[in-house]
Amino acid sequence: MQKQTQKEDRPDQKRHFSTLLLQWNKRKNKRQMPWKGEKDPYKIWLSEIILQQTRVDQGLAYYHQFIETFPTVHQLAKASDSKVFKLWEGLGYYTRCRNLIATAQYISSDLEGKFPDTYEKIIGLKGIGPYTAAAISSFAFNLPHAVVDGNVFRVLSRIFGIDKPIDSTEGKKYFIQLANEILDKGQPGIYNQAIMDFGAIVCKPVAPLCTECVFNKTCLAFLHNKINELPVKGKRISIRKRWFYYLELMYESKIAIQKRTGKDIWNQLYEFPMIETANEETVNKILELAKKKGLLREKSYEVIAASSVFKQQLTHQLIVGQFIKIKLRKRPDNCNGVIWRTGRELKKFSFPKCINQYFDHKATLF
Image (cartoon, rainbow, N blue to C red; front, top):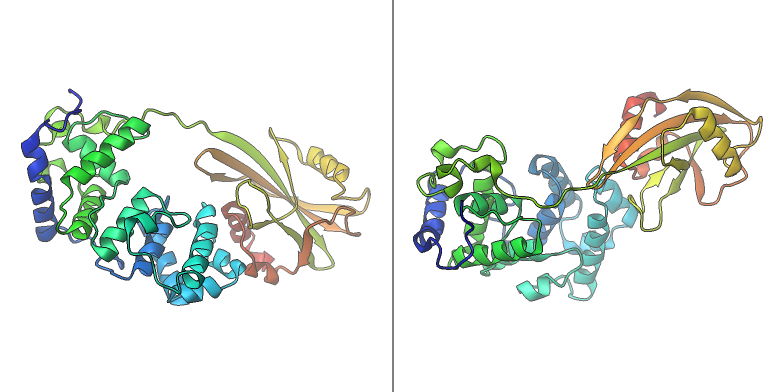
């Protein structure tokens, strides 16, 4: 297959792309989502931020909860960070949540609640990149900016036979240029939703519906049996493995927790006092390290249980967690940043997914 590198390549295919896509959208697209057809930029923004790095089926419930809890940007802006984080709990990529709070506060106070209505102003908001800005500007304001997400990369790379890596600077630039070239400028919102839906339900990553596809007479990947080879990714993700040993310290019916700070993962979420190691360690080794850190006093504690291993896969990291339940006779020396709460009170705090998995496994905690 030859690379499609010139604007003049397959001009007929490009010219008819939007026509065929919109015909499919009108006749066959039955995909339902609560934000389809939405014109309120606040609701569109919420849905797009929630769906960054999140599957639609997972994000739906969160979208409804946010809309019900914070019907307007003013209400979101006035909410405490802890309340917003608790509502976000389980979605991961918590930088999105911090940016959500900051942007809501900016729109509420500096812009008096009026969402920006141009692409240039929207992309200037915290946490908003080219894709999200294009989505909001086209859906809410019918501005001619093409969305380019994973679905769009896949559709365009297959139909036009493009083997440029979608994770390269050159590749991204090329796909964005092509997407804007074939965009239906008269109805960009409908077109953008249609191409994303098409990628989700027809041109799927695995087992695409090629025999039913309206492009199967011109799709280069289909015609040249390259469906499973496109789109191309050039980079390999290096996964870092980290071991987190959590000490579930109990003293007089209360449990020690602390807030994560700094630039590491899960900033602003809570956890038990934790010891991180580069490799798997025994419980006895962790207890010795805990003593050195002042988290345990010699002969003043009793180990109740050690959990099985809990894993959480992040984009570039694999977190392997184990929980050691310890009953204290005296409070530890090192209590900086530690707060003590009952098991029931822990429900009010936001925790990483692996700790919530532990809570679910140990339901009797509450």
